[in-house]
Length: 133
Ligand code: THU
Image (cartoon, rainbow, N blue to C red):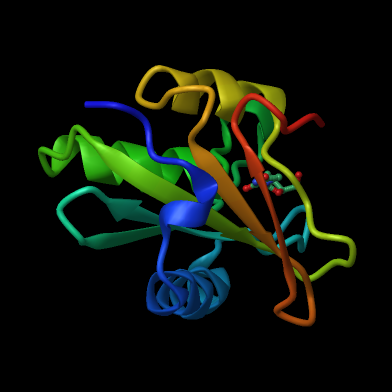
């Protein structure tokens, strides 16, 4: 299936991604960094799958919100994805790290939209091909 362009999401889909990614911050396990990250994926079948960062005393063992959300979606059987939202408590919004971009690239095209929500709930959207650290 052809990748979905960022402008193809409806206002309702963006609003739901926002609500769910922001809510997912509350589920983060981040006692070391205290940096909460929530994520939510919209699948092509219209389901929303959330994740949050889960840290570990050994830093590289911890997992980012994006990878928790994508892993959850994959093991639930989803194969096609419309967009991901990532929410943090900072401004400007954070973009996915290199490991997350590599992880997401396995399942998405360079045109896959990444919505990045900041502390105020405002967002910027870039494609996977555009996001940089
Ligand atoms: N983190 C994410 O979960 N996603 C991002 O896009 C940026 C960073 C997490 C990893 C770690 O738990 C904390 O934020 C600080 O880097």
